[in-house]
Length: 297
Ligand SMILES: Nc1ncnc2c1ncn2[C@@H]1O[C@H](COP(=O)(O)OP(=O)(O)OP(=O)(O)O)[C@@H](O)[C@H]1O
View 1: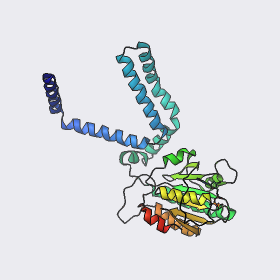
View 2: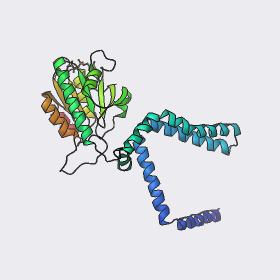
View 3: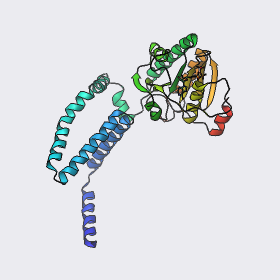
View 4: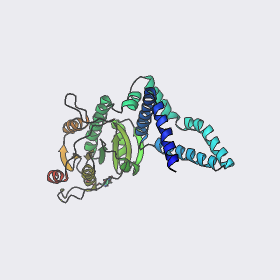
């Protein structure tokens, strides 16, 4: 037993001695690419697909080692045709990614560094949001928008319908248009895109909130208490525009004030030292429970 352990340790030592600096660089690059790939796929259907592929791969190894020839053969065929199948199923995504790479922007840098902040897209998103809110305020169309920042709101997104669309005033108004299928619930904006609509948010249990606030506003405050997201509400009853951040609700805002708040909260600052970035909106310092209680009204 002792001899076997010593022999194994000896083999391990010889293997380590054989590792060159090139091997380390090689492994480092592969590890980093896998890490970035997994981060990119996190929370997407591609991640579930990757898990499925891993399970099939593991099943094939088990089937082969147990000499289950038929099962192993079938799994091999699944792999052989899998690449073709994936290319067909993910054709739109692949095409979009190749187009981005062809333009020499975005995806590759995003993939390698994960630090791209598309300021133009954020600005466009803010402009379209403000225009839509101004219009919905006039028409008394109720609306509730969540701007995701550092904290991922994947669980909230699963309660709604994924749309992943470019932000535009007509689309935002269309989503909240009375009796449209997705008008109920909240529209989640992720990475400056209209990501999911009809989402259910947690309601605030803050007793100090004004009694005239209904569930739409309570949901906005609740979501802002539970995350670092920025919430925008248009009241169906009064047309008033409000913003909730860190449990605090600012009401009766003009479109210009709404723009200023969104710019201050979502746009990256140019000169000041920047907090850790990720794609899309920038994170904001979370308020403590005590701070939130004090600020809520
Ligand atoms: N938990 C929730 N998550 C997301 N949306 C919600 C939630 N609760 C309510 N809403 C939205 O708010 C609507 C109801 O708004 P309600 O009239 O109760 O609120 P309000 O704060 O008084 O708003 P308004 O001033 O627009 O009437 C629902 O139809 C739904 O679209």
